[in-house]
Amino acid sequence: MQALRLVAAGSDPELLEVPDPEPGPGEVIVRVGGAGACHSDLHLLYEFPAGAFPSWAPQFTLGHENAGWVHQVGSGVEGLEIGLPVAVYGPWGCGRCARCAVGIETLCEDLEHAPVAGGGGGLGMDGGMATLLRVPAARHLVALPEGLEPVVAAPLTDAGLTPYHAIRRSLPKLTADATAVVIGVGGLGHMGIQILKAVSACQIVAVDPKPEALALAEQVGADLVLAPEATAVAEIRAFAHARGADVVLDFVGSADTIALGAAVSRSLGDVTVVGIAGGTFGFSFFSTPYEVSLQTTYWGSRPELVEVLDLAARGLIEPHCSVFSLAEAPDVYRRLREGALTGRAVIDPTRG
Image 1 (tube, rainbow, N blue to C red):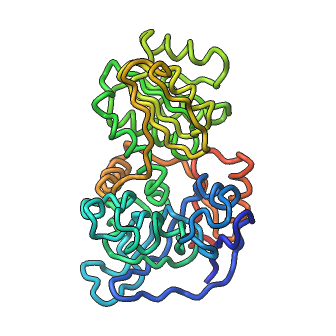
Image 2: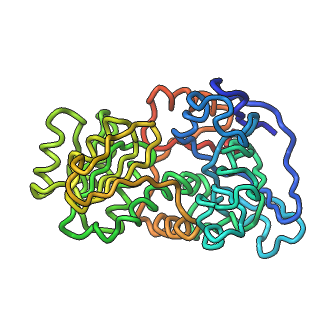
């Protein structure tokens, strides 16, 4: 079969022929119906130096946002019918530590016994940018709700799950009179706006330098859209009842965006950095309003993925996707790197 592979640090991904995977004991082969192209893959391809993640040595197939249909099962797997539509929970931990036991495999505490330390399919192991995906344990599969197709479900496993997890952490602060600020309206940010609308009654400000991103933010429910210009801080604070934002979700993570989030925050608010652009912020007693929490999040839990899929099946959230064939995947990553895509790009290996 063909697969889009990370072949070396700092190089473009390549479409190569690889053997079809076979299931071992407890494993499942998924026929891929959708694999999301994530901006974090660009960091993996072009920015992280060789050896930054020793257990993620090239080559491996890209694609950590995956959904499809059960194709084969290994010995010992029960309760999964061939043809069942499923989403793949992407972080693959040890399955037995305290965090994994409650479905938070992103924070696995026994990495020595995980299939790959701190990663999963498309992150150190073969992912879903191929016809077939080998999943090391049946617990990583979530049956899709009725009416939700794999090509739509695939980006929800990260671009939906990651903002949902971040928002859920701050949910008590998202009261009806609260203001949330979403910085960066890309694949995750446009989902974050929709999730905020679905689970809270707060007002939402979206910040992005691209006019097309701001148009998408308005389309999916933002109450105020702004470019990150010199007047943005004053405009946001004024819009937020002249007191600042209760929750800031930074889907970029640069020094400028973290500083913006801190500048618009309200006392007792949350500033959550989700993006991995590598920015830093000088933290001190007086660097933010009193009792502001600065935090990071990483992906989300399996139970939260179930909730995200349910929101989508009920029509409350919907990823804005451009769908491409596997043959087009190398060009998709080129366009993603150039900033020429809006929303989420999804590779559908079933397309000719």
